[in-house]
Length: 550
Image 1: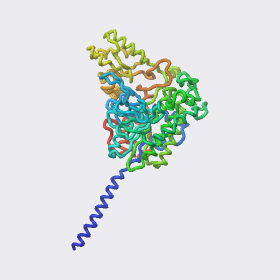
Image 2: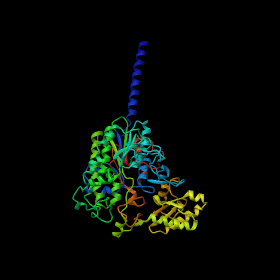
Image 3: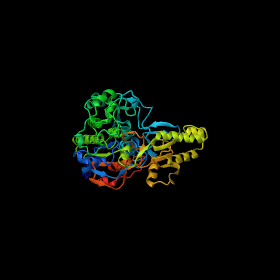
Image 4: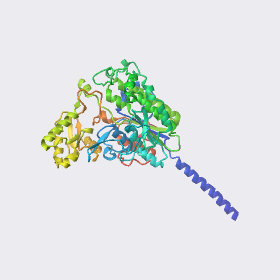
């Protein structure tokens, strides 16, 4: 009897251990994608998904639209609309009022000092000796979805950010990212800072040693197809476009081989090859860091900065922009093919969006009998300060119109015991009378101002008390800061051309279809959190887009 009891207990222990092992195995197998790839296309308007649709091939933008899920009515829900804020908002699910990135540059209101979004004097460059390497995410005040993925896996997930622009790689990679790499014009290399590592990995050093910018720039930029077929764009060589230095006008072919000799490797930022070069590094990271090839989900955040450089110079109606998107489409198709071969189709999740859009050149609008114009911020700043000086007997009471906001010289006002409230009212009254200004609103009066509710909400979300100006300027439709001779385009305003962005999802866990109800840029991070079953970032105020997820 005693032997039977011992035998029974022995088998019971084996069965229990087996069940526990199975439970542990099932717990480790929580369904998640092998890799999440975030693609930010800097300055991509939503309509570029369809403006050139007939000329896209099947495996780039069309693949995402046809196989994946597109949120057709996604808008930026704050002001101003610039690169650093866009990248921060996508990855935090938050807005400047909380995440603190109030512009590419913003003014610390207490001191009047201008701060670049990712500058950090406490870190040292890695891979270069240039100041371009002294960057980190320190100024970002909330966690990112990439931080939350690292936390959820006890820092076993790898997170890597890549972009030609430092802010395009650093802010998405978050505070705890394993690496962020950006391009240094001086050395012609991909670099980082001591926030992430003491020296570049061997594979990055080997990648830099290939000197790919020189190789790409030796091939002059001509149109991918016969130039007469670019019917979606204005004729080449017009007054709305800006030429490269020492070039024979804004025309094809662009002699990149000659520009490289005089301007160095940094000129690759303004060539379609800049996209190719960025995705080359992304593919190298995929291979050498074994991303998505371990037992946890990894995250590769890639920002394609080149569209912004080309757009600023030539404008959204140019052949240069059209040709660049047709080439980017081919680059994306190649990148997706690499992901398919490395991880298997359907084993990774990709989302594609933009940090902001771009408005048409105001001269282009006026010449085509459409509303628009230039708002000359430089001369108006002088005029406003002259007006205030006459009343308050002090010079330079207003520091800046940066980010379409009025920042006051608070130290001067305090030292001379000036009436700040009266100064603010005088600024509002002066600006409301200026051509091109629709509204000038003091943040203290935002709840009672006679402005559209959407303006009110975007102003509140975009205003960080320590880093934003006290008065927000809303320009009339078709207007942005510049002069009558300005070429290309800009952004930063509330205009749909600036705020309506693409948002397309594809791959693991993603439904097929489209959504036309309104969604916000701040909804992207919480949607990723729901997909990955992890916590939303610490400052997230967005809502998960449930229709996207299977």
